[in-house]
Image 1 (cartoon, rainbow, N blue to C red):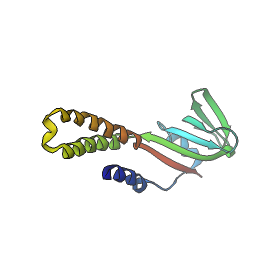
Image 2: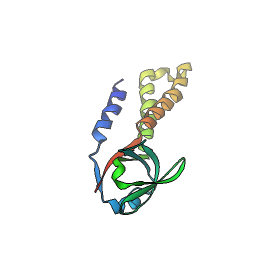
Image 3: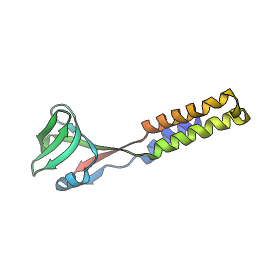
Image 4: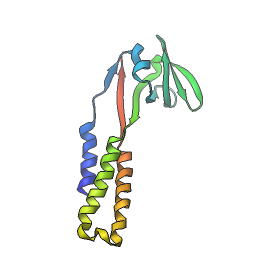
Length: 137
């Protein structure tokens, strides 16, 4: 239980202040990242940031490539997955069940070891998403 609390608390520690990006540099900075654009009018957009002009941006979504005015942006978030927290979760899962079972790890309870590792991996995967709020200048 303490492990889960520590992993959740680590999310607060790793939280970052909004990153400021000049408008014309957004295409280079967002390359390879999933972008979520909260718009003033209409539904939010998720996809790949394709290009910008002085007064508009183009994003590639599931429905295709669409362009929108720059003034329609309320908030931009970038998302990236890393391996770090998945690895930590799997290790914590294995170690924690090993510590609980102690010498009983050789018997049928030893089958809990891969289950705990897998659950730790799944928890780590859920905590693994690196989301950054972007302020566009």
